[in-house]
Length: 186
Image 1 (cartoon, rainbow, N blue to C red):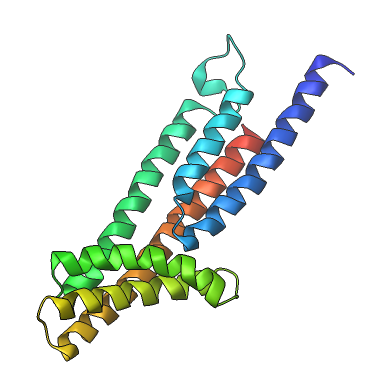
Image 2: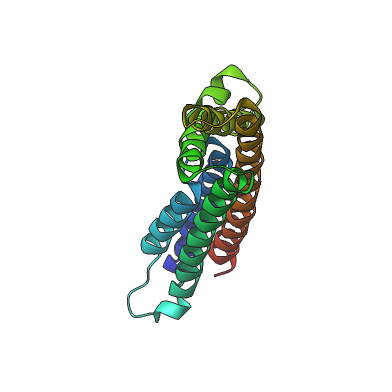
């Protein structure tokens, strides 16, 4: 076996493992795990493993431009998730504390939903939405708002959390596809 063939087999093995690992990171987004950043990290590790000294960075199996694109997408995913989640509560009349409560409640709810609703991914998403809504509602009630207003804010926080997660999943899928194409096609 020549070294070129051995290198090609190694590259395909690294690419296959990368796609598998990035699939896990993509699915973890529903749990509130920073999966987009983990996709970037694992793709960066794969790029480092396949780095060929003397070859220009733009001609590596996974190039610098791919990694910079993944970085930009990861930032975009965070911005979209944050804006959607907080905006859902604030659009319904919530305070900044209610929006922060929605974010914290969403993370706690995603973890709880994973165990309380044993349907993969759906339980986590429903838990995140429920947690965001309940905590936002509770924070607004504690802040002196009426039950009706607090519930409306809680519903807004729930919808915002679902939309934020969907937006981040879309960005995560684009990152997953970009990393997979770069790893296999080069």
